[in-house]
Image (tube, rainbow, N blue to C red; front, side):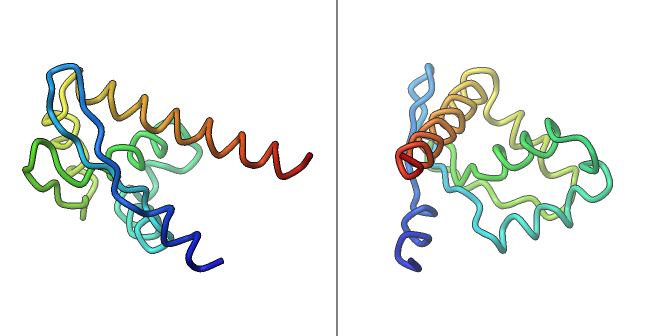
Length: 111
């Protein structure tokens, strides 16, 4: 079981429509905990905001430039700025595909 959890946090590289490489890594439990502390009360009852923060906090690098994890709420917006429209869309697609794949696994396991 632990091996599966480790594999889920493996880096994945995606490419946006500008040809930039974006390295993604799903937040692990500790990463999510840190992010919850960062976004604080702003995330309470605002699932869309929290989902966006989790998505953009999963960016490890953009075209080889490291993206540090947010340590305060204002750190999320520079990640969005660096990604721009093309990168933001690529990140959203990656997240949506991950969620879809996870749903397939759950559905298959139930059957």
